[in-house]
Amino acid sequence: MTIKYASSEERQCHGKRTYLNSGDAKRAAKHAMTKHGGGKLSQYHCVHCGRWHLGHTPKWRKMSTDG
Image 1 (tube, rainbow, N blue to C red):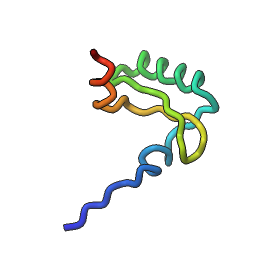
Image 2 (cartoon, rainbow, N blue to C red):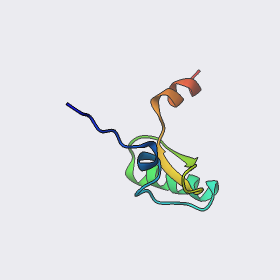
Image 3 (cartoon, rainbow, N blue to C red):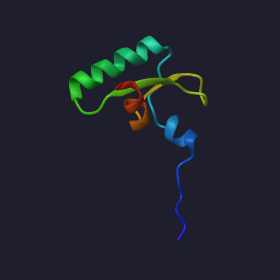
Image 4 (tube, rainbow, N blue to C red):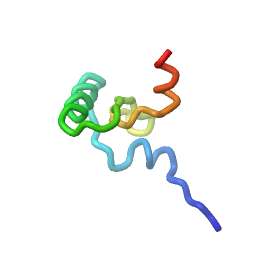
């Protein structure tokens, strides 16, 4: 059985809304979390397209900032 994983570019960039800067992305994340609830969103600079995207904060990152 072969398992196909999405490339990091597909997961990090393709099909995601883009923002021109960190501030715009941060405001959009705050708005989305307030309006829709759910998990914490973080903005990140995309190495593939050079713009900013939103994504759920990885579990390892949450753990490293708790202490």
